[in-house]
Image 1 (tube, rainbow, N blue to C red):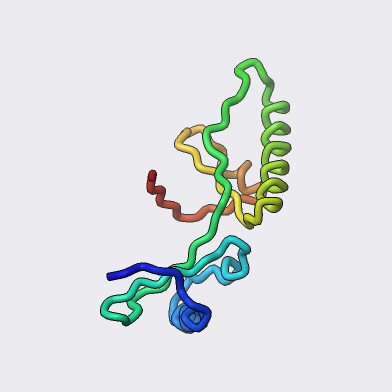
Image 2: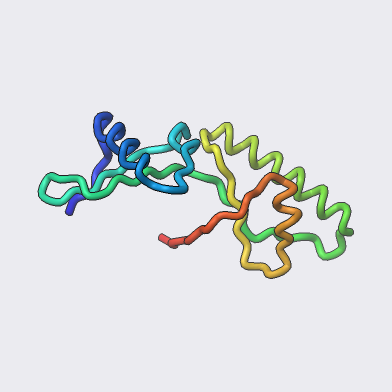
Length: 123
């Protein structure tokens, strides 16, 4: 088995194969940081996988003396500025990851986040 960057022709085949799949997020195909990998066995492609870069917000640390209003407003400003920085870097998504059970999912949704399945692999 060998993994390599897909050629332009293979990228078109990748899209054809995606048409047979359910739950494809088609918008990610236009991301500036997107690339397509191909894994082949004996010269035959077995799988294509496209991937792209994202910025991740992780582990917010609030001043314990800050009131609830300031905390909420500061998170809104933080997200707005990280979104701007992500666009400058060519990213089209930011993710918020938290293992803190106090994370307010409804507040995150109000800031434009959507719930997705995410599996992390540390390198």
